[in-house]
Length: 300
Image (cartoon, rainbow, N blue to C red; front, side, top):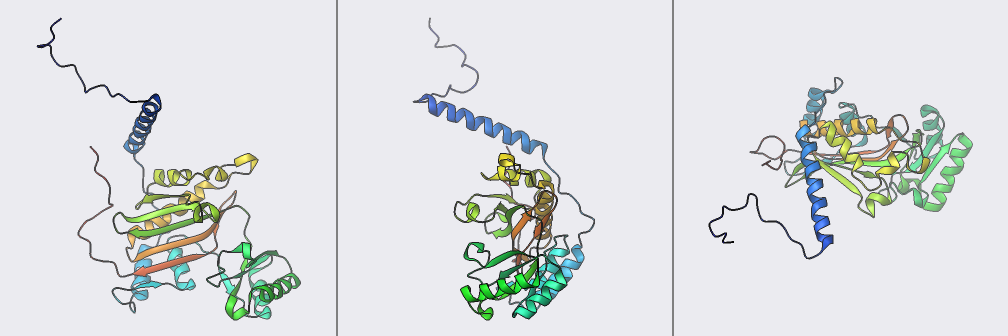
């Protein structure tokens, strides 16, 4: 029949694909997009924490930046970085310097056994595989023996910069970071410590300010996430504590644009609670911004 004057069919043209595999892939992408839309439609919340001291952090940052040139970035020393993070409820486990075996023994008595003996030299930092970290030292004799082995094999104390730190419950070692991206603003990054993030690049990212939904999705986005949830019979770790840490760091960098970089590594997440063993905080005078609020894509 002649259909020249027939009304056009409703909707657009039917898509066609040269192979069934491509059609299946396109359909999968459409499903994922639909899931993303539904998840974002429900939104999330940026939680409030009563113990956050925003004014105290602002006062501390003003003093720390007083001697920093306008175009410079300063790395805070350990004490200042720990104090700033503490204003937002992020506790970094203290370390005590151990320039001599006697100093290491005194530090261990202050912290209480068992302790860890670690080097903090830049080329050995976080390199347990090179023998720069000795764990579960329960007596002074073990500590002194490990100190001697460390300096005999890796170098003099002045080169190694050894420290003593209290042991924490075992768990999964993770990395939590925040940096300023020139295009997107402040970004949270999460991954497992070691090979997973450093060699394989298995990390996930979210824009700041992060919501509770963002934090939950962030730790589940990496390929190695099953290690957090009881992979092959292991005990699941405290992901709620991990999500709270991410949210507190998000609040810190969102409230204070002077904080241009934070690296918490490692963060040991145990079955109950977590321990931040080391932190690096970088600060700078914030550049002038004409845009306000988080940088997000428009919704249509």
